[in-house]
Amino acid sequence: MFSSAARRARRLVALLALIAAGATGAVAAAVAADRGFPYDGVLQLEAKPMKGSKRVPNLQIESNGAAAFDLWCNKVAAQLVVVDDTITILLGARTEKQCEPDRMQADADLIAALQQVANWHRDGDLLVLQGERSLRFHLSGN
Image 1: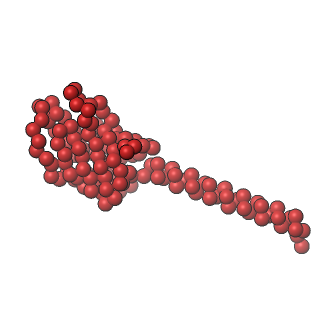
Image 2: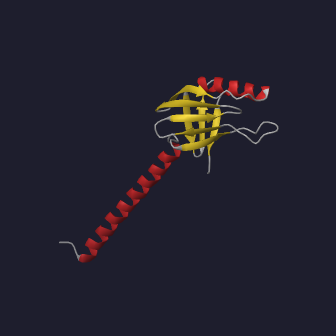
Image 3: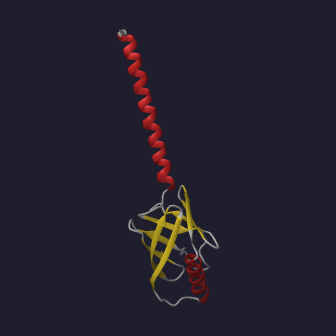
């Protein structure tokens, strides 16, 4: 039979193995969360505000994929369909505010880019929507 010292040593080794496995699982879960699609999040487009404004487009995503894009001037509702690294953005109703021509054109350009998005990836607080051009959004801290 094993001595009590040997039993304690085996229990200690088993305990350390469980702790290591748990820590590895926690790290893996953190990495997965860091790379998962940011449902229930608010993200801001990586862009500088246009002249005379502090506004930068943002994206709010609900847990069911319902989304709202606040563009340079107007807003547009959307539904995001995400499967693995592919994404389809179904644009819906939009507001029809009248703004300066450069803001209206920037809205049209952003809508066109959103309609071409086919893939996504995430790295920390950065969500990249990939199409003919990449759109980079950062998770908002508030």
